[in-house]
Length: 236
Image 1 (cartoon, rainbow, N blue to C red):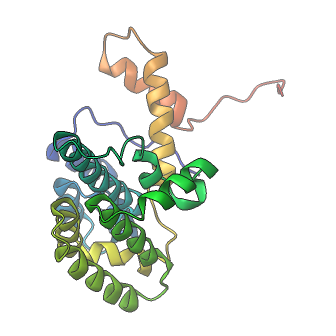
Image 2 (cartoon, rainbow, N blue to C red):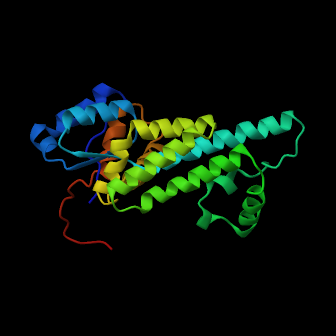
């Protein structure tokens, strides 16, 4: 069962530490897995408060960072081609490069096949992104680590700065990325992201509330799985 346990008002270290204070030392000591994004305060506070837990960097945030880097390369190269009066081969190519291959429409597949004929930074960055997806197919953390190291070396030699930045990030967080394999790929923030979407919907519904305390109450009622009184009749 997934439910909202706690609401913090600000995204600060102090607020995040307040969550673990609320849980208490005994509960924190019993946590086996923690999944988060790469925000540095998350990493530091989790290391301090849940040192025994396996801390996993969320796979979907890593992929999102990769897509952001690829889109940065594409946008900059498209501007460069336009300034130099070159053929706008990257026009309307954004989703051809960002979407997963199985989600491409038939026209997008044809457009991508055409793009791959060009020696562009965007194409090389796309190939690096697609190659990185092989990481998640490994079962062994050891072999996954070898693949990750080789990919980072290739990316750092690519002379594509946004992809080099991703490679440096992966090297910096190598252990936390490989913890995904220690958890057998069963831990991610996917469910939490769904909870976040429901929270945003609740916030939109509560438009006009003047107090954060009232909003907090609305979130708990919508997402906290609070106990409900027994009724004489049940309604279906």
